[in-house]
Image (cartoon, rainbow over the protein chains, first blue to last red):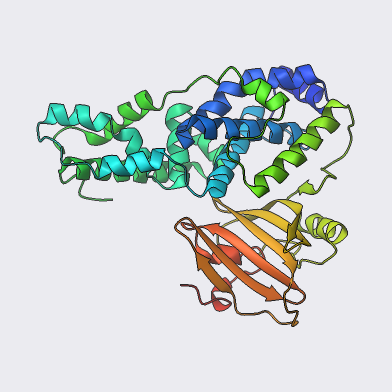
Length: 190
Length: 198
């Protein structure tokens, strides 16, 4: 992994303890970190906690950062770990999951496909919130950050094939759950 | 619902609904002032305290240390973590020099000084596959020199596996979704013979 010159300089400045360098790093990556945190947690206060923790970890960890991955990939990893750590600490993230569960328990929908599609589109995020932590993170990296399979694999430390198969599985889980809400039969396989 | 391409529709909806969002204006001030999060736990306070000291050290211009000396080490080398715990906490956690081969990859993330029942303890964080696992090691209630039968306590979201070995007590916290044997794979290649999991 070869770091860009500007990235390398920024890292060196951060290591030297230059406050303006850390501010520059923050400005460059704040939206990335916050977006992942917010789309994963579904809650602004939790996302701010996660973003704050991530940048403080970056501040501490940048001295040990060896440039084996890009700075962006490294920050993604810190963010993913902060999200998972935060989730474990809080045990469960509310109110998104509660909201999701209440929506899922709502009365059956109309059978008319147009109405159904419109109705289901309001429920996609709620169903995403019920996914397993790692699957939800996969969805966030793919759809919020628009990362390629290779990039997701680098962030999560797994193979590209694993990313592809897990994403395929998550798509089918989402399709099945949404179809169940709609009262339809959904895809015939998981 | 199966008449229209559900997966493609989900793809479009996810792209639309999970779009990036800008960071709030006050985020930098929050980081700079090291404000506490809105809802904190005891462990989180420690994290912030550690990060605060680190921020101070960095901004004060101290440089050159490989890892923190304020109660936490970020390191994947078992030998180094083992030595650090021995030095900081005073007891020996028998981490093998190399994580056991086979099964999902295991890697150490960090260790930190902690307290358990008022006594010095170590909290070790490691990763198994995609799961992050916390292990607390503190003094045993009743040192027996033996590896006691592990006890498992579960909540809706977590599972804690605890046991005593030698003069130490161990407690490993996993997410409920994680495989139970992740509690053992840091040190054991084949944990299935050690614990009768649920």
